[in-house]
Length: 145
Ligand SMILES: CC(C)(COP(=O)(O)OP(=O)(O)OC[C@H]1O[C@@H](n2cnc3c(N)ncnc32)[C@H](O)[C@@H]1OP(=O)(O)O)[C@@H](O)C(=O)NCCC(=O)NCCS
Image (cartoon, rainbow, N blue to C red; front, top):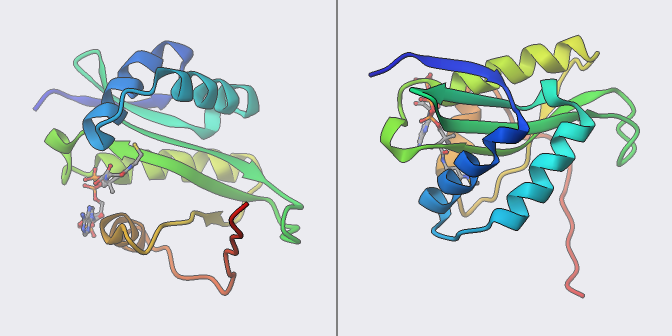
């Protein structure tokens, strides 16, 4: 397998991430990713990471440090989106992306990292548990409008 480099997200990664999202989810959504990647780059390009192999992005993890939201005063890193090419899963790319994010979050003053996972996607929850994440006594609430 070619060498995998973990580096910060760049705006030129949009095309590869759109393709990766289509591989994972089956939908071609260029506008969604243009907006989303623009947001994370404006917030803090060092708090989102990609895995590059042979000039192509094969994994990405997007996040940011937030504080003062939902009554959570301490700065905390948030991992909000993750995707690894199914062809290279199981090779620690997800773990390496997360470790790069943890390091960036620490540099920004965060002492914890949060994420939210749907119960209907148990694989992603297992992945985060393998990285040491545990359930937190917070309840997500939703109301349909
Ligand atoms: C979850 C995901 C990021 C894991 O990536 P990966 O590169 O295969 O993960 P790694 O190889 O780094 O695995 C790290 C740890 O998580 C565990 N893990 C990873 N995938 C797992 C799974 N499906 N079930 C159980 N455990 C899993 C591994 O066993 C490993 O644990 P270990 O280090 O203790 O052995 C990847 O499967 C994925 O992208 N899933 C789809 C995510 C998605 O739907 N995103 C939507 C937006 S595009």
